[in-house]
Amino acid sequence: MHELIVTSPVGLVPRELENSYPARFYDIPVIGLWYEDEKLMMKNLLKIILKKINMIT
Image 1 (spheres, rainbow, N blue to C red):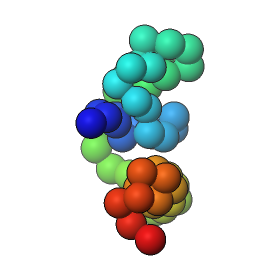
Image 2: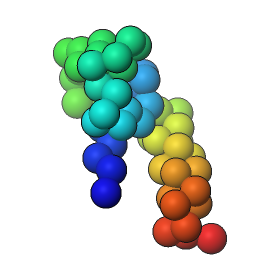
Image 3: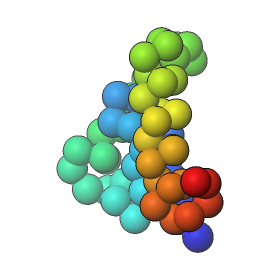
Image 4: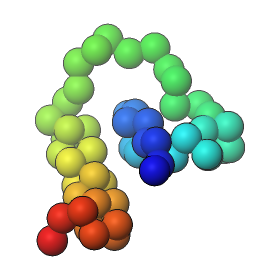
């Protein structure tokens, strides 16, 4: 099982890489609102990962 951190602007960050550059800088202050393009990016990234691990077709 892999844990992914969903973050903008970095994207999906595997927990194993959260202390590596540039992922370690994902934890920035946010207002809690995501722009539509950020949501679309996350959706597409999740689709790619789920396809690679054969969770979706």
